[in-house]
Amino acid sequence: MSDIIDEIPQPPIAAVTVVYQGPVAPHWELTSEFGDRKVVEDFAARMQARLTLLPPHDPQFKRNRERVKRDAERENITLTWDPPELDIDPEREPRPDREPAYRR
Image (cartoon, rainbow, N blue to C red; front, top):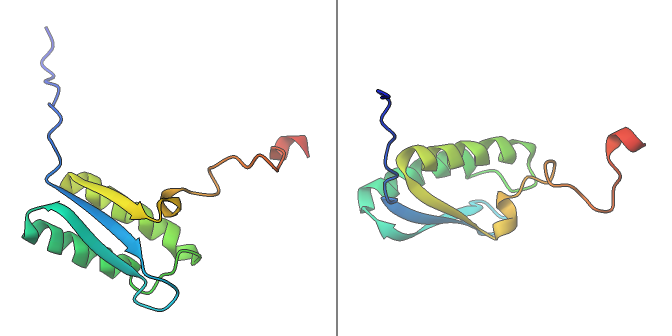
């Protein structure tokens, strides 16, 4: 018998969407679909601290996007991005128009 107890996945405590507002700062807005107002406001403050002055093409955006995602996972918050392409890392996605580096 094992002493390890598997945690039962808990339902999310909130659901939020990070919306790109455009090229003029502030670039980001957080909308909430459900959840405790205090939890959402605290998450929004942390998200804004990481992303406020960063447009998606900024090199720092990728690193801070990952921090926001980890923060949402830690808080058990469902996180989506609008537009959804912002959640995709172009360096990790294979590009069909390019050969792998080892074939060049």
